[in-house]
Image 1: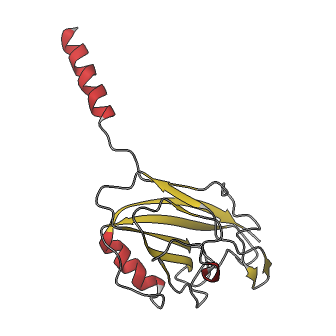
Image 2: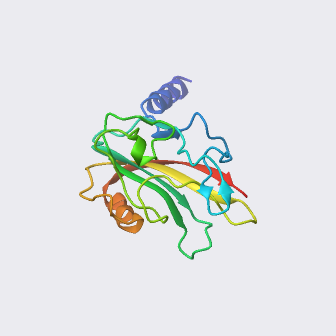
Length: 178
């Protein structure tokens, strides 16, 4: 019985010693993108407002964050990048709703919103063609550096650098259907 108690105690110590998980949340997103996030154009009539996002428990050594929004179901053969933001300061734990509208300057100072598949920087909301719902993957990356890129960097180039510098990532999936 003493051996069992000792092993149980070790198991509880080990369970309590785990680092907390890097987590992405949103106070306004559930399982579905709303009209507020949908694009206003290309046949959609949404608000085109980027969602509020917050994260916690970034890994030690985080030097910056990046956020992307990607539609793998877009009928392009390569998906569709809706939002690419990087060099978010390491002290930041939230992007406020609307931060993706570059002209409003709601994003943290120093971050870069690079071009998306809409051909310009900033957020472009969901607007899938009629048919089945599309999955929109929103990901925050904790990076071990700032990226030496500017607002003209393509999503593929930013993605390459994110893959090299990511310490951790956390994602939300939301669905959108016209």
